[in-house]
Amino acid sequence: MRTLIQKIIVLVVGLWAGLASAQTYPDKPINVIVPFPPGIVDGYARLVATKASAILGQPMVFRNQAGAGQRIGTDALAKAPKDGYTIGVITNAGVVSGAILAANVPYDPLKDLAYLTQIFESHYLVNTHPASGYKTLRELVDAGRATPGKLKFGSTGMGTGFHLATEQFVFAAGLKALHVPYRGESPLITDLIGGQVDFAFSSTASRQMIEQGKLVALAYTGEKRMAGLPNVPTVKELGIPHVSSGWLGFAVPAGVPAAVRDKLIAALTAAVNDPEVVANFTKGGGEPRNLSGDAFAARVKREIDELRELNRSLKLTLE
Image (cartoon, rainbow, N blue to C red; front, top):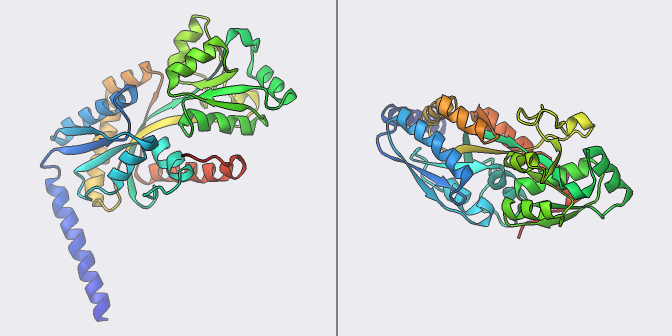
């Protein structure tokens, strides 16, 4: 009985302390860990954070902590103080593929992080080059099935969203294809245009190359057709049950008081719905999202479970 009373006292004191801190939160700047270098994706996160900081009344101080496929920065976030004054930018590379495929990952994405809001999602275009002769995704798939292992696909690097999305597609389509990794999308697109690889998943930024006739768009991996390319069918339309995307969101270390998390979620959600943010994301070919809290965590868990199951066949590992 005495032990039970002590536990109740500790619980009540903890709840009271959390509520008290939430009433004054935030009363100082909030640090934001970004697990990748500055660039376009970093810019999306900064835009949302700037809008959210205006709502919260405190500046957000960014720190890019790149390396090890986003695992260094994600680990720093997981080990940060649990007071809500350190939040982090996350993607599926850091909390899904990196956490599952790499050896000795020092954090558990489901136990060590609390998910705030997914803010952005971008699907892929499946592209080939004009000299390949493929005009449709069905032609590519049929050719790949007829000559297993002959097709080569490029990606932005081992374990990246581009790579895993393509591996999922190849598996779902019943193909065997050779993976050629590149260090980023720029060199990948250059070699795809030059015919060094047969096809690749590309960001919607490749639309310009498609319109110029340098690339041929075979399909789009979204649930519905891309607004800017209405004549390009989705992968699902072509009978392959495959929808994939890259996404961007925010998280905090597990253990941050619920009331503080709720304040952050409310500010981030309002920021994502800001007209300037919506216009910026849409112009870049992405879709604003405000999947938050438990729903966001459930998505991460689902993707982790799906990748684990897929990897029983693929047996991918990251160095």
